Image (cartoon, rainbow, N blue to C red; front, side, top):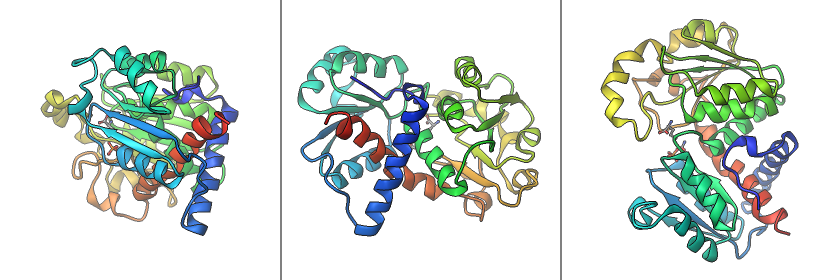
Length: 307
Ligand code: CP
Ligand code: NVA
């Protein structure tokens, strides 16, 4: 039983296979206004402990386009680990649905779901990682550039879950990652270590200008992630030098640099309106590509592999 808890769950071949499927399904939908019903009769259970726009809607729509169905289970319904233990939720839900997508606080909880559900489990964001986002982001860069090999992505801001998943995917993509965070907000060293061990070049710095010099992409995300609301005031004090603004975009020296953000954005904090709405921004392509990348993932997990 395969699950998708982190990009590291995919071999390099599987990673590119999923992205290739995503491209085929995107082209098919764009040409015909529909997809072949590869997941007819399949049901995805979607468990959320946190809010969501993109993850919730893109998985729901992906299942509909592929002839299946998705069930949205809000934070108030299941109360994962409160009303019922995580393994018990997994055991029961796994009897009703063909796959589970879960957005959780503790990464351990998606692990437990995968261990006990008896059906594939997809991590729709945990405090540790956000592999569906990174899959869509690599797809977006691949569409733009044709090849990712040797390109440089500069991450500026908090060393968070989205960065961890980008690091996990960097060796598969052949991407170099430069990370600029304030001291004390570096990414988890396990994610850095796994990227380096598998052959990706990862540079950690506290200097945003240094990180972005010559970069092909600048990526940023909110300064306080979901669950870190209590730290927001302190983070707002520490992070302003890491804002992605026009001056930082120009510091790349690359007229073709793209600017990325997983969204939701806190405009005026980690990114300015000028940059988010400017000519380098690919924010809306990234958001759209969540749909296509997840179609590729769902077909791989539930269509082809189950066949
Ligand atoms: N990028 C992303 O996962 O967005 P949501 O939190 O709206 O799902
Ligand atoms: N780092 C953000 C990503 C939201 C999609 C968070 O975890 O809140």
